[in-house]
Image 1 (spheres, helix red, strand yellow):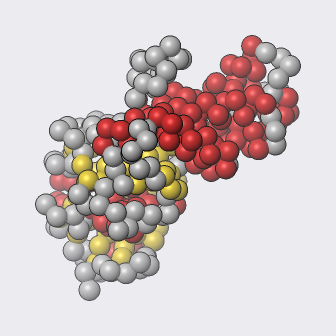
Image 2: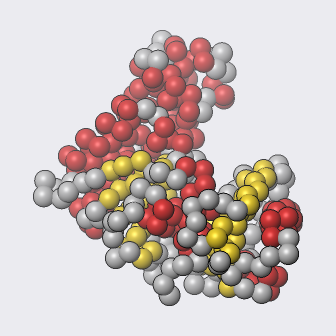
Amino acid sequence: MTLILALDFGGTKLAAATVNLGSREWLRYERRLSPVNADANTDLEIMRSLVHSLLQDTKPAAIGVSFGGPVDATTGCVRLSHHVAGWENLPLKQLLEQEFGVQAYVDNDANIAALGEHRFGAGQGYDSLFYITISTGVGGGWILNNQPWRGSVGMAGEIGHIVVDPNGPVCLCGKRGCVERLASGPYMAQNARELLTRERKIGTILRDLVGDNLDLITGQLVSQAAASGDDLAQEVLQKSAWALGVGIGNVANLVNPQLFILGGSVTKAGNRWWEVLSQVARETALPEVDLKIVPAALGDDAPLWGAVALTQVRR
Ligand SMILES: [Zn+2]
């Protein structure tokens, strides 16, 4: 039996699991929320205690790690975390290898999710796919010729910052009208808030959902209000689907992967969101480009399964 240890540093949560290679069931599994004022040290300390309780007297053959932020996958060095302080240039692979005496592999969560879906989820049997997560942010990861493709400095797959509306609102990256600026959960909430502030007579269902306290609006509530027939929420959601559809259509024209897999909380926004994005992607892609867009299959454990797959990638 080959024991694999999989770790997920998720920004707000930490998870660790062990599995015998070839099995699709965890041997042991531990999950903990990251404390409110977490930094890299507290996260590492919590992860260490999870791992020791998982492993006890056993030793893994390899460690795979999903990290929620940019990583140099070659050196296994974290560049930074967007959510937790103190991760700047932290040599995570090296730390783990010193502590556990086995090979460790580290990659960012979007690349890991692409790999997990390819080996264990919706992408099984395809040799080229693009995985997109639409959640707090919008990110992506490539599988090309059955292998991860990270680009020259690990920046491949940043569909979130493809510009689809050059005159649109300003994104956190400084450009206007990025896919993420229109499609992510927090930006959908912000767009709804701005429209509600400007126009008092529309969006009454959404307004009622938060008792007129617009600060409470989330991407999920926008979806909920849209499903209940709220005009303003439907407009915001439509824009999200439109932006993503334009992005996907352009990516299809450029690389023509066999499959697009969509995961993350915003993909639960309902059938209408899926219909609009599929239609817009179809209209954006050339007629000769085949387009297949499906939901992700692995759910919350995607980072851990991807981390298992990462230990098995041919190098
Ligand atoms: Zn941007």
